[in-house]
Image 1 (spheres, helix red, strand yellow):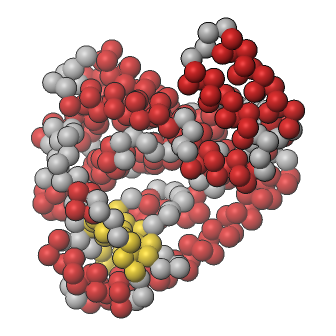
Image 2 (tube, one colour):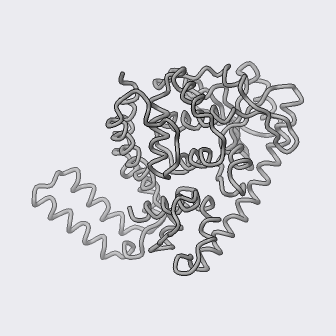
Amino acid sequence: MKTYKEILLLARHSLGKVDAVEIFNWEKLYFDLQSRRFHLSMLSTIGTLSGEQSPPKDILSQLKIDAINYNFISEIREERFHKILEKVRELEIEVFLLKGIVLSKIVYTHSYERFMGDIDILINEDDLEKVSQIMRDFGLVRKEDEKDAEIRHVCYFSKEIMIEIHWDISKKDAFYGKVILSEMLERAIPFDFRGVSVNRFSNEDFLMSLILHICRHNFRVRINSYYDIAMIVQKWDIDWKLLWKFAERYKLTKLVVLVLGFTKQLFDIQVENLDNQCFPNSKCKKMQKTLFNITQQMNHINPTYIPKWMRKREFGFFIRLGAYFEFLKGGSLGKTLKRMAYGVAILLPIGAQRWLFSHFRIQSEPVILSTERVVKWLVSS
């Protein structure tokens, strides 16, 4: 919990919202940032800290090495994508760039600050087979997924690159409202990617697309997704009247208020007319608190850092002993078994512990229950 607050403090500092940053355990903070793929987003901010606030030299050196490595990988990936994009545009196929590839170029100061696992593009569904053939010609292989038709995209990958080809930004039967994509495409603006002429959504529609992306993932996203929104609100000129008009037209007002309100809560951003929307704010604030719990829990599903004192075998003994006493005093069998499982896991090598926590999705049940609660509220009248 302390580390999570430190991450929020760093992020607010990067946005100019707070002046002082106090870090208690830089080693743990680095591993927690890395597990969220958020460490390079904070590199510039960490580099400005001085005096007692500054990190140890080895942590700062490791961050710089990470940035160099990521830049090297990113350059290879973007050069590959550039060649594919040129081929697609030779066939006069309209391409719209989405999410990270746009953000890394015009929102973040350095491309390494915005981690990308893949590159997202949007095309007309009628052009899907042509674009897919180009992917195959470049040696990319389709990643089969039975949900492709529902989530309305296909994924192609190779050793160097992964590209998601979308033909819509909403799920087929979206519960949260649905944008009229043709209108968003009419409002799109030109975007130059290494000399290749493509398009991106207008500022308001791009922000809307990021909000929809969070919802597509049932809000089980890292803090990075909300930081992207904060960066856009901070750096772009958003026509808020237009945004709220689009949200109302597409029946997305509750979703937009929820996500923007939560982002404001995290990073103290300014959102015009947020409090003037026509539904009870008290319930919305409860849902924002639920989102806060989800983002915390998401970090613990795949832990990458285990404190040194937890690595000792004696610690596992005390957990099992605690489980025994919990059972004796009337604790539930489920909680007792879970605590005992932790005690057994602690005896295993670190690699095996990480695999167990990841494979069995420790603490994922609260996340699922929380997201269901948010979804239920969104679809209620």
